Image (cartoon, rainbow, N blue to C red; front, side, top):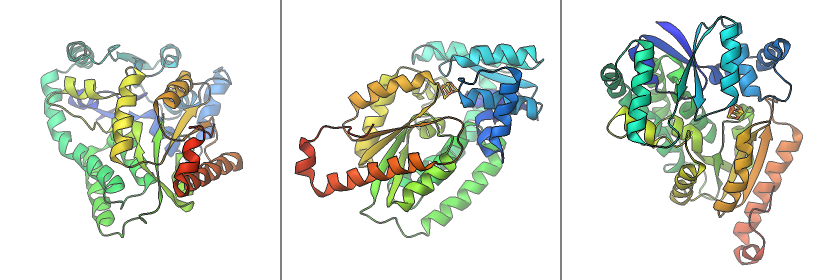
Length: 344
Ligand code: SF4
């Protein structure tokens, strides 16, 4: 199978139906033993220092791994990708565009999917067949999610890693399914996490320092039981067709759709506080204003840039946030008078 890079979650069913093996370039970046090296490739090529590290890293991965075909999502993800695509084309890479519709509309989605299928030389009918084959594997990811928040037997880091990897199934859906089945068995045999732990939600794009973030939170007696976008990447609302699946996917559209999903899950998962991760130089950081207004819980906003580890400053802020939640739970009446969202 021919490899095809993707800059974010795309309808992989179409890529697979067209005979490609999709590779999420973001996952390759964070999985690299030295991701800083990949960002440096972009900076040496002229990418500005104040450009998001994910964009620079994606460029570095394409060149480092000699990826020849890439699907660049030019609407519904990141405006920087438009210019990234131009630079990739300049380097001789076949950088193709895919645009999510500007609103979650099934007819418009059908049209966008048809266009993508035609561009790659396949059909929606073939992609629907792939959707049905992937469905049991996507169900496993949802099972892990349940084991995280309902049975309390999976860690926030496991939840993050396996759901975020559903964007490309680590390049091999069969192996992803087999490995995940094994993990589910292991989780089922574990003792549940303590019932008095602090339950956190994580919203926003995946953190550059995710590898250290989740274990650190768990060392402090808390756990992430909701990874908002990672869960979306796994397609929690598959519907009856590809068009429905990618219309129900909240990430590409208005922030209001995401808020609805976040609020439902906060209630369902009995969440005590929310971490909103924002990437330095990302337009999505402005959305923090909207989230803070909409979420009726303490919110800690964390920013990351090209730091793939947790620095002391971030650790201290997390500790202070968890301490505040602990005190809030112990003395609800006193804290209810305090201003909400006190940690910023
Ligand atoms: S973090 Fe923001 S700026 Fe960076 S690639 Fe994602 S959407 Fe674009």
